Structure formats: structure tokens, C-alpha cells
Length: 141
Image (tube, rainbow, N blue to C red; front, side, top):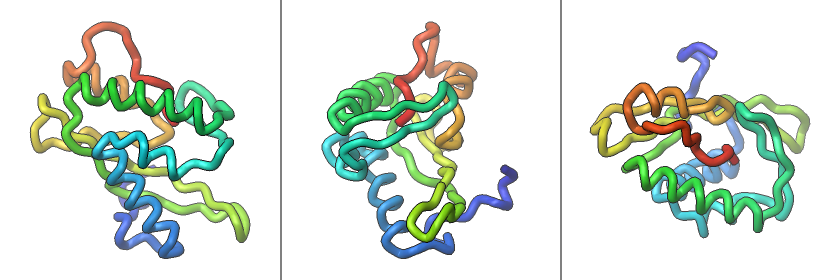
């Protein structure tokens, strides 16, 4: 997707409840608040990322989210936010929403490291020297 297709959350043409959910989830992710993050997920759900897809239960997700939070702490994440998103309505009850994330790290200062939820941010982290050994971040959820 090119940048012109991304829409800031506040300007996205979507149901207000969906917009609010994304804003609240982004705040929980920025704070690496695993307890709050898990409340946004159903008891069972499917997660997809660059390494494939997986069906998860909330307990498994909680463990993975805790490992992910530990990882992001270890590489010095200071802030994360949704820079843009797009909603694709699949039916009257379901939408797919790719999310354009930005994260800041102690090492990068005010510079946003950008990634899309379905892409792997590991390459950018390596290029910036945030990751040294081949130890990828926990599976995306």
C-alpha cells in the first residue's frame, strides 16, 4: 500500500466503536500493558503475520503477549501508536483492518520506526541496531 491509502485513526471512515477499540488497543500496546491487551481478544481467535497464521486461545495469547512485551522492553521501546489504518468490510459483521504502526525506541529517539501489522518489523530493527543476534521478536499476534 502506498502512504496515500493510509488514513489516520481520527479520520478513518469507520464505526465509532471500532475506531475507539483501535485507539484503546494502541494505548495498551504502547504501555505494553498485557493485562489490558488481552481484553481486546475473543476467547479463541486467528492471528496472521509474516510467518503464517495461527489459532490461539486467550491463555496462549497472554503468554505470547507477555513474551512480546518483555522483548519490546528489552529493545527499548518507549512508545507505539497507530499511524494509519484502512478498513475493508468483509460483510456486515466483519472487517479486515491492516494497521500501519509506528514505534519509538530509546536508541531512535523521536524517529518513528514504521511497520504494518502483517509485516515483519525485525528487518528494520536489525538495520537500526536494535537487534544484534538472530533472535526474532515473538510471533505477531
